[in-house]
Amino acid sequence: MLTELRIVNFAVIEQLTLAFDQGFTILTGETGAGKSLLIDAIALLVGGRASADQIRFGADEAHLEAAFHIPATHPLLGRLREQGILNPDESQFIIRRILSRSGRNRVYLNGSLTPLHVLEALGGTLVDIHGQHEQQSLLAAATQLAAVDTFGNLNSLRDKYQAVHEAWTASCRMRDELTVRHQNRAQREDLLRFQERELEEAGLRTGEEEALQADRRRLGSSQRLGELTAEAQSRMGVDGQGVLPDLALIERMVGELAQIDPEMDEAKRLASEAKVLAKEVAARLRDYADRLDTDPARLTAIEDRISLIQKIKKKYGGTVDAALDAYRRIREELQGWEQSEASREQVDRLIAEQRQAMIRLGRQLSSKRAEAAKRITKAVRGELDALKMEQTKFAVQVVSGEGEDACGATGMDQAEFLLSANPGEPLKPLSRVASGGELSRVMLALKTVLAEVDQVPVLVFDEIDTGVGGAVASAIGKRLRVLGRLHQVLCITHLPQVASQAAHHWCVEKAERGGRTATSVRVLKGIHREHEIARMLGGLSVTQKTRATAAELIAEGMQ
Image 1: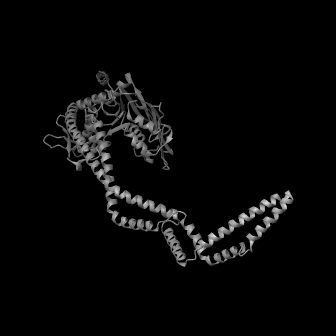
Image 2 (image 1 turned 90 degrees about the horizontal axis):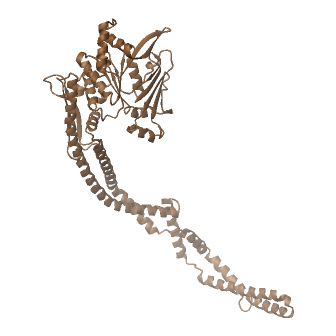
Image 3 (image 1 turned 180 degrees about the horizontal axis):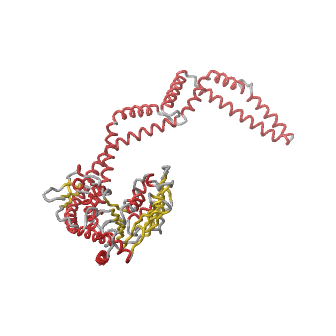
């Protein structure tokens, strides 16, 4: 419920703070006193359109602030906590809006600066405003269908349908993507198959290029390598001359020295190792000479292979590793296409299953909506009779489609509220036949019927009783009093029959202070309330008779 409203520098309101009670509250006062300004302020605090013209003359900014207590059972409470606007232990929700002549309007939710669109999304769940020019929501097809679902307690079934519909829609999108991929596959596949063959035939291996470069250097220098090998073999020892014969002679000499002088034992060992190492070098030279390749054809083959590797590297990422990665990706994509055919078949089967479940739930929803439409029609007609609109015909028409093409986000149905305000006239859509006053009373009838299931905690009615009087006004007041038992109801009225039904009565007044006009609000009780009801009955002249009548009306409203 709305617990407090604070208004500063808004139109003719200089400063005003109001504390609200639960139940039915009425606002009365002379025409032009500023009653509708309070409703305008509330409308702005739940996302209404602002204008710099609404700022009080001489002020740069207007400040509007409202505090709401969110019931523990209201779904908005969990939503606000999930968004971090409310702490887990908080239930008070404060909205602050600042209008600036500079255009820098700001919105604060529980002290945090917030975009206006967030407030707009939340506002409709807090306050429902109805008046001569605030009825558009009732005329929207989506709102009318939602009203049928709410009245029929069908929101759970509707949620199940929507979940299946969303899953079915997602599967259809997946199938479309697979289809497009399949359509584009032929040209893409030709390219990938060519690249796959090219990389397979290239047969790249990590480290191969470095090995080929070494082979190319060796083959390119094969003549010099042969010359050096032959010269080294020659110097190692041929025909008793060279390193090996000399080392053998040295080993014998040092051995003889060691026999005479043990100090030369280490020298003898080193001489022996030198001879062994020299023999190992000679053996390796022989082996190398046997393996030395001087084949020009081999060199040409290596050059061709290096050229191919360079070409593949340049085409597929600049390195052998990049080309190998490209080959793996190409193989995976081709394998993915092979799997996509199986995926399309699986998706088609899933779509068929989801379609069947969606249509089944949609038909259940259609059937229950038709039943709810009959019941809401009967209930609203009863309320219209109570509002002295006996000649008015009302009906809720639910038109249901069939099959997949009829399945929308909210079901297979369209709901429309139909009205005939005059005898003999056919039922037509509500928006085409109802005047402002008729529409207001139809809204009141609907809100009364939906009172127990409607989750909007605050209902505001701005002069919905315009153009009526007598018994009709009394009936409107009684309906508002009934609504006040389940909702917080605020209503502006000029009719004493309506005002007398309220649990709380405020009088809005306008006076001149310091050369400026300012609006104020008084809470009326007891004799002061009687006087205001009497004024509404008899104008400026309040007689004993009108005061007595006012007391009777108030007493009746308390029954």
